[in-house]
Image (cartoon, helix red, strand yellow):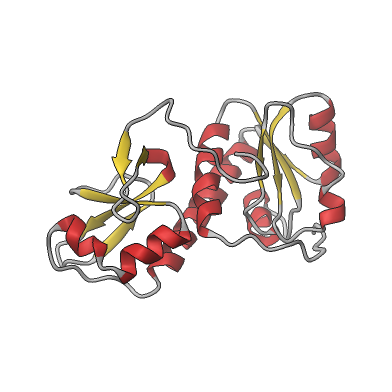
Length: 206
């Protein structure tokens, strides 16, 4: 992922077809849904629920189109029930997954938070992923640069990053290479597609 947005990567993993766009994409960039026994459509963010799945690109536009055009019924070839605010529920689940992964990375020593620690990792070339809060101060965030050939994540809020690192708020964080970094980047790509990015509001770390 770059600051300009997610880049499609077909180099690894199996692919599935999005019921909204009709395009075939790598599974990690899609959201899987299954149908429960009562006909309820259930988002399967982890991709582990039993049953036949249908896939939707991880973007607000694709998900909204699937709901409005009743494409889930066509995909499952059955009458289905959609939960209210499906888009928000998918976003909530992906945020929770991303926070969990970052928390695990922190506990294993593969992630740090705070301007000085992140700056130190970047200077020592230990950081492979720079993470900055979407609602952080633009001026403050501009003082740190994405690692060379590294990744940038900017779709989580300061409060959400704070939950991952056991703080009230976090503006700057970094991930080392290996470990959980690829899984974090994959989840962040999905979340970025679901969110309308908003300019920083000058939040500070707590």
